[in-house]
Length: 264
Image (cartoon, rainbow, N blue to C red):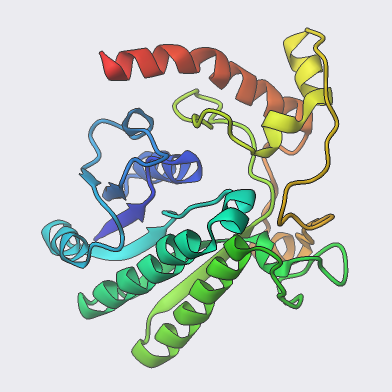
């Protein structure tokens, strides 16, 4: 049994790859490296450069590595960019997911984990947001992910595909072992803008400019995590912002050297 991780050279995807390797699971990564970095993936992991929309390549990869499960992270993720380029987001996020699902089902894959987003909730009617809260995305990014969720539900019912949908809120921090972290220049993730905490972790003062929220962003989204705590007895290992920022800052300080080593 091999697990295919699409977008495995990205921020969240690379963390998943390291966790799977640590657990002794066989893994193969598919990433087009448009925003990901090869150096974030352990060297022993088979790596395929390409798109999830390339049906032939995906089919070959599934067959060659005996893939039985897929964890699908590959996507465009910047909300304001989706407002400016909605068709690009529907193409990369929705249409490519459709192609991936089609090839996977025909190849006999029966387990699928989909990386979605809290953006599917839009301006949530109630806060904190539960898993069964109504979905009403206000950005093409959120809509592109919700459309993929709908396809996944329908494909699961039609073909017996077992699946899980993960709707992330704010993803932040870095691997405490400094193997991977946020590496994209000018990223818009939480830590890039959590300036109060960054000052404390760095011990430095710097000017901060307060601006309005990004185009397509809801006013506020807070997750209700009571169900996962009760069902899985799950508790976060790193839940205070100062610890999260400290890990992210340590990664940022190491990142230039990692990039130089990778390009040498």
